[in-house]
Amino acid sequence: MAVNRSNESEGFLTTTVDALFNWSLKNSLWPMPLGISCCAIEMMAFAGPRFDVSRFGAEVFRFSPRQSDLLIVAGTVTYKMAKVVRKIYDQMPDPKWVISMGVCASSGGMYRSYSVVQGIDQFVPVDVYVAGCPPRPDSLLKALMVIQKKIQAGGKVVPELEQDKILVE
Amino acid sequence: MGKKEIEKRLRSSFGEAIVSVDEINGQTSIEVKCERIVEVCKLLKEEFKFNYLSDLCGADMLNFEDLSARKAYLAIEHGNPPKSVSHEDRFLVIYQLTSLENKERLRLKVKVDGDNPVCPSVTSVFKAANWSEREAFDMYGIEFEGHPDLRRIYMPEEYEHHPLRKDFPLMGVPGSLPLPRK
Image 1 (cartoon, helix red, strand yellow):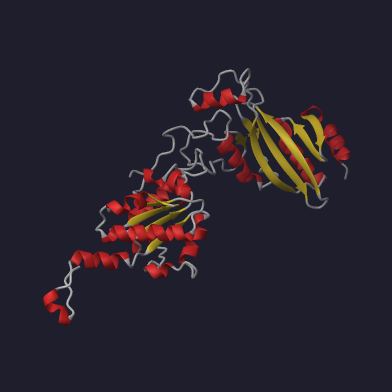
Image 2: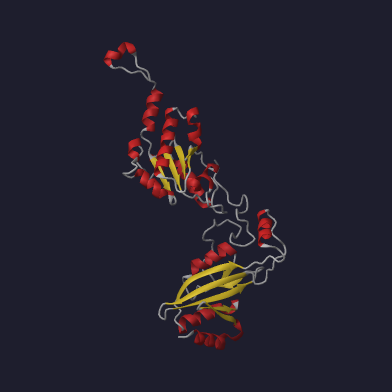
């Protein structure tokens, strides 16, 4: 965005459509809460008054993938559940983002077992991984902010974000 | 209604089919021959008011001869289960009975052969056995004869293995559970 000096007195602003579009997109993320185990409790706290995700414009939890653009996978994904997670992801309209919340979704966590998928990135693309068992709601807020920065940058990887993009601690 | 009385009654009716009666920490467990388990359950339910089957589960008593548990574990993880295993009486089916009327509990055990794991179903006596027997079938591969609907209960229907068997690798058989494509 740049201020056009010649028109300063009239209060004009020039920008690109993309920048405006991304700005509105990042401040109105509608999460699809996929609370499949205890991480879901922290996800509820993240939406509740103490942490209050509506400060970031992402308070409209839709229980319908067709109205959402942010998938929060909060919990242990078993092989049986993997098909469901993938189906929900496929039903979400583009553009869409994915947060892998907690160690179970990110790497299988303490469930090193035949029935649990050792990381959901084996079948859905993940934008941000959140560490913790379960992570505090602040960590999830941080993950949301990372996604906002990513959207503002047009979906590109921002060098200053490189570290954040991989893992929120 | 004492445990002695139950034992006496069972022995007089089933004789050889009652293999042993043990008491540990005040808990009685009776080992019964596989063929007579339905009749034993029926008698206990009708005469001794054991009207509630609180649990039914399987157990794998596989013993790796000449191998330490650690070595057996490593061999399984590397995909070659040890050969020297005894298959006779490999599985156990354990029935936990409760009498709500007399506030008593009783445990029944049945040994099941490892090569041909078949055991009669007690669903005709206790309807609650239905899902528990499906679980034991899913996890150990024990087939319950006379079960009305013996399907897998946890694992996908097309799955080929039985995960709680001792010779099943902890992380499963690679490629046996397909994931959606990325």
